Amino acid sequence: MIVCAMAITITGYGQASKPVPEQKMFSRNTRVDHQVPVPPDVLKLLLSTREGKEGMSRASDAQKQNPAQLFRAAEVHLHGADEADLVIEGISPMANGDHDWFWVVQPAGKKPRIALFAGGNSLEIQDAKSNAYHDISSVWNYSRETLTTFYKFNGRKYGFKKVLSRKVR
Image 1 (tube, one colour):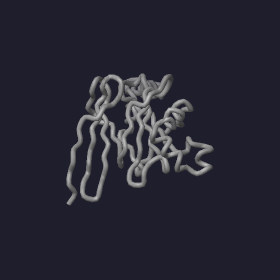
Image 2 (image 1 turned 90 degrees about the vertical axis):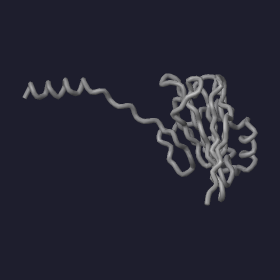
Image 3 (image 1 turned 120 degrees about the vertical axis):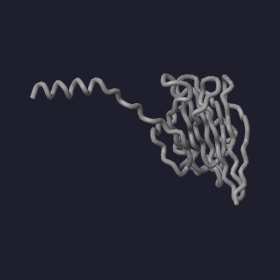
Image 4 (image 1 turned 180 degrees about the vertical axis):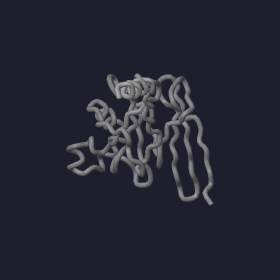
C-alpha cells in the first residue's frame, strides 16, 4: 500500500501541468474565457478616444453612471507570459450596429496605452509574430464580401499591414 502511494506521488511529480490555452478569437458571439474587470485607468483611456466619446454620446443615463458595463475585457499575452495585455470589446452603444469595436491595451498594468483600435465582426490573435509580438487580424463580414485586415506590431503599436477581400457568392 505504501509502495503504491509512493509510486502515484512520484508519477504525479514527473508530469508537468499543461498551460491553459489562451483565447485567440473575440466577437460578440463568443464568450470571453478569462474575463477581467477593466481597470479604472484603462477605462479613462478608452473613454478619451474618439470612439469612446461617440459611444458615450449614445449611452443611456444608467450606462453613463457606470461606463465600465459598456466593455468586456480579456487578459492576453501578446509578447510573453510575464506581461499581460488586454483585448477589450465594446458593448452597445460602444460599438456600431453591424460590427464591434475592439481595443488592444498594453500593458494591462502600469502606464497602459492603446496599441490597436479595430472595428469588425471579430478580432483574432494570430500565431505569427512581428517584433516578438503576436500579429492580429480583424474580420468584417458584409453581405457580398468579407474583409480581413492584418496588423503587425512595429515596436510601439499595431499598424495596418494589408487587407484581403473575398467575395461571397
